[in-house]
Amino acid sequence: MGWIIVAVVLAAAVGPLLWLLPSKRDRRLSELRTAARSAGLIVEVASVPKLDARAEERVTAGGAERLPSVSCAAYALALPAPLPDAPLWRLLKSERENRYLSGWTTLSPPKQTPTPAEGYWRTIQPILDAMPGGCVAVEAGSRRIAWLGTERIGEDAAETIVADIHSGLSAIAELHRELDAAARPGG
Image (cartoon, rainbow, N blue to C red; front, side):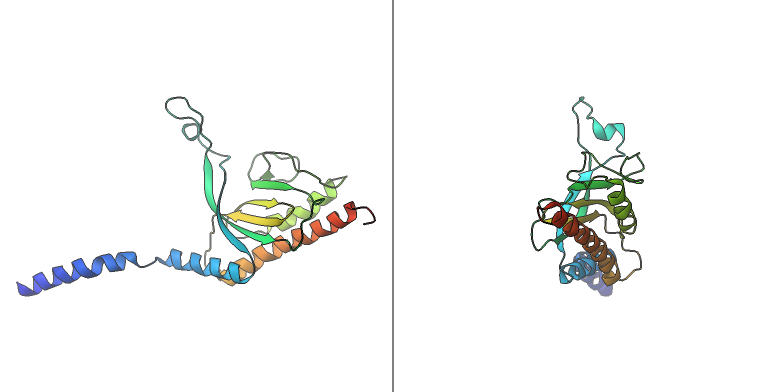
């Protein structure tokens, strides 16, 4: 009888400690975020609009409108200098039709895209399609290029995923540096 009491007391003491230990997914996310920071990416918590929200997610029972969103992480590549004349956009992964890229949509039109824009979007399409890890959106601004996603890791190494994200963001940044330079007088 004494052993049973000792076992119950030990289980009561050790159980909460085991519950506090991070799960395998938590450890993998920590590795991924640490690798991203080591690669020079800024890691933030973000949200993007949920495009395929059900009706009950869009309206409350009382009839008030909701703005459904998806929580995600943002891995951003800060640009060394602002690019005021580079294209500005946020593309969301979606099956909805889009006149810019198949598989991607926007909620507002891109700004400052080169004329004609078809060549620009043909260059961007393979970069976006190669984005790993549950990418749900990519945004390009004058100060940063960002990957937004749900951080699906799978069995790939964190360094491999981060290298692929960094490579894609760097390719977009380089294209935007060239476009910004060409748009300036004397460029």
